Image (tube, rainbow, N blue to C red; front, side):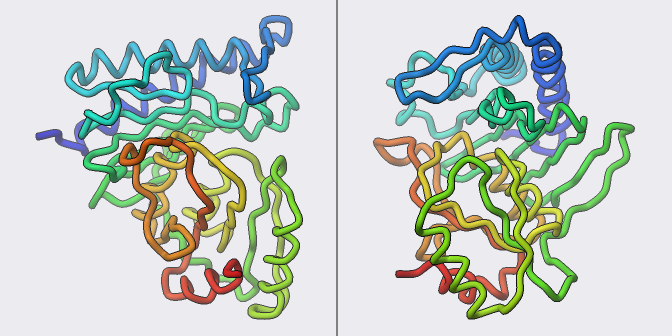
Length: 271
């Protein structure tokens, strides 16, 4: 039986090490080696360096638990794994390439379809978001200061997060419904899994994701949001599950800071 509280510091350290590897390349654009996958999404030397470091470190830490990474070459056996690491070695590669600084390292432990431990490390800011089931969610600053996260905002005007790279017509309809239900709101543009972490720390109230993502984009942030007191759910209010379907693609999902308002926020995205 894994001891999640003992495991978490090691995973945090792995995230920080991966972040350092990313930054060593980020600061030298001539080493980026930007390529494009078949879906046209970018891939850089930083993605691969982080992947190799994390995969090797996790295999040493927990040899019995397989690693499913965005950059994994063989995923054919994954449905046989009841426990696995779900990793995005560089979430926000578009943010990396355009130098917005909104990119992160995401590492999650999934057991029986549910994330039970998660680390999201932001290399530029040198801050870590971390959580495990029953242990609360925490923000660790670059100087090692640790503070508990609470996703319930104390402000009167709600803040809605919008994706910098994924806008569409439906987003405008959702914003109209938010205005009708909540009145004035503040909109923030943030990249990568930082959006979900902003909800976890109470900086934002709602993040509607209306386009496709992959399971490694959400697993780590989901447990952080949940342990902070919020939810990451589909349109029916069900928490996302992992490695239980033939596809690794998520449908639409919604991150809500205050669970008491879940029905109100989901009404803004219903047809």
